[in-house]
Image 1 (cartoon, rainbow, N blue to C red):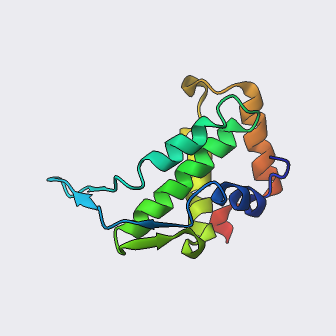
Image 2: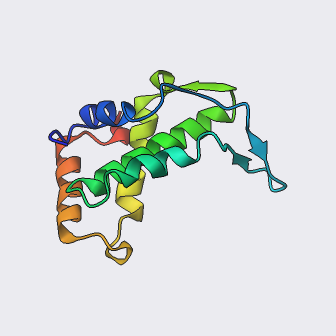
Length: 129
């Protein structure tokens, strides 16, 4: 990744996903949690190709944010088109992860924290719209 602008990061990440998901396989467990077997492997499989990359911390959490947005949409429809997801929603999920779930205890290196700080310097936070 060369640019830290969210729009460019998202555009590159979305290209690694299928353009749509048929989520007719939705399952709801006894606790009311939704499970989507057709979606589940994607963020994890995509991220594997980026393990050890200089921008892994951003790529990993951006793909998890995309997966979260896909799963959220899939609760209400039988087909999710990635082009119809709201970029602002994905950015919100992504930035929450960067702020709240990235800790030294998770094994991230000082360079990862520097990259996160660079990301926030280059972008207007999602909550500001």
